Amino acid sequence: MTIIRDVDSVELAVFGFFRLCSQRHRKGLAEKKSEHRVEGCFQGVLMNILLVNPPNCGRSIPEERYGITSLKQIFRGEPLALEELAGNLLHHSVRIVDLKADPEGLEVELSDLRPDVVGITGVTCEANTMLNIAAQVKESCRATVVVGGIHASSDPEFFNRAVVDYIVVGIGKKSFAGLVTALEEGTEQKEIPPGVLRTRPGSQLDRPAIRADIHDLVMDNPPAYQLVSRYRSHYILEKLGINMGFVASAYGCPHRCSFCSIKGQTGGSYLTKSIDAVLRDIQLLPNVPVIRLVDANTFGNPQRAMQLCRAIGEAGIRKQYLADIRSDTVVRHPEMLQAWKEIGLRAVIIGFEEVSDSSLAAMNKANQVAMNTEAIRILHDIGITIVGDFILSPDYDEPDFDRLSGYLSETRIDLPMVTVMTPLPGTALYHEQQHRITNHNLDYYTLTNAVVPTRLDEKKFYTLYAEVLADSHDNAQL
Ligand code: B12
Ligand code: SF4
Image (cartoon, rainbow, N blue to C red; front, side, top):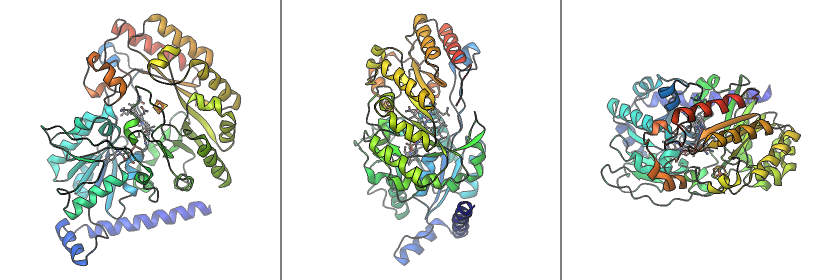
């Protein structure tokens, strides 16, 4: 009860601040700028910033060509990327519009807020939609359009178009705030912060290599969770019908699997938030019983993962957690999983990917099937639910589908997730396979379509894919 009262008062303070923001915003931006220049400082509300999460998008070949609807996925989850960015800009007037929760929300926000800057996030299958949103913004106002996120970081050249002004590569929290300051001060033509690229349609972008460091996380400023409170009821774990919130505790990954685009997030570093910052963020979601730690690899530094576990226990936080881990980490540190189970780890998401060592080696997974199988045994013994990711190759023939089905039924993974190997722009796999790609429309890069030709007849391929998924989901649980 005390905790709830405390948080309510924090939220009230935040909303009070925003009411003040909107009153001050009745003045024009130019007037505001000159006022602040006279005062010789740049504090207070200077820019109207709208951050946009694209709607659920992506197209499905099995549905469009063969009427197989079961492979299309709908996802929900809060736009933590935008909340993190907003948390570092709260001296401006910032809003988040989540088009996954409110598909019609963009127009309303554009006319209501009249933004100076619009930031758009997205993954690869959302990249075309990001451009459509950028075009809509440009038609309706003169806002500066900035894109960021995993696709912008992995393939910035894709966004080198007239409807986009700037591309932010990598973690982005510090560089976006720096860009906003440059725009506010009118210095953006002279100097833009590292990690920001100005578009030059028709010419190639110079892309400096950026490797993120701990300062890029700007940990002192927590995610602005309050900016999505009106959407919170949409962020549910459907299987259980309960609210789920997102917390980031680590960025990047020390591994280099060839198909994975996570390297783009940090330029290759593995960075962890301080234990205090993670505890603070979890506690900023007091009424949310399940926390998804959205890190690519929460347990990439086992010693630090144990410290986090102890700290959560000592703080007396009672929640359940979902987190990503590698199977070799489970096998090397079963005691760590036992300890995490005790503080509420409900489920882990593991990229098992394939059921033969040669396929795992080909994708540079640096892991083996025996390790995967042993991790499943350990987790079953401890009582942690397993969400297992598998990747089927467009080169699969019938015996390969049978082998995958056999492994799934033998190992009794609680919730298998099966995707199709997709050469995502910016990955090592893309460089290897770009000559084979026949479908370049990013709307299909949902990881449930084959964008290179399938070895089997295409209809047969999707039929077997749908069957593997249906069979393995018979007794699925989370
Ligand atoms: C949570 C999550 C989701 C949520 C997204 C919630 C939302 N936005 O609505 C949901 C469940 C919806 C989702 C869906 C999908 N996801 Co997903 N998802 C993740 C996950 C686990 C975490 C993302 C996250 O919140 N990270 C924490 C934030 C703080 O970091 P961040 O996203 O990198 O954002 C920072 C920077 O990138 C930057 N930034 C981001 N956006 C912007 C925008 C601007 C303007 C600026 C300046 C900066 C900026 O600043 C942020 C703060 O530092 C990642 C893996 C990972 N660890 O990143 C996969 C990941 C992003 N997902 C992935 C994929 C493939 C998908 C799906 C296609 C489905 C699938 N089969 O897995 C769908 C696509 C949705 C659709 N069809 O519409 C891939 C993306 C690969 C790619 N290149 O496309 C990832 C990387 C997983 C992986 N290892 O492959 N996903
Ligand atoms: S697939 Fe997992 S282990 Fe491999 S690089 Fe990506 S996040 Fe790391």
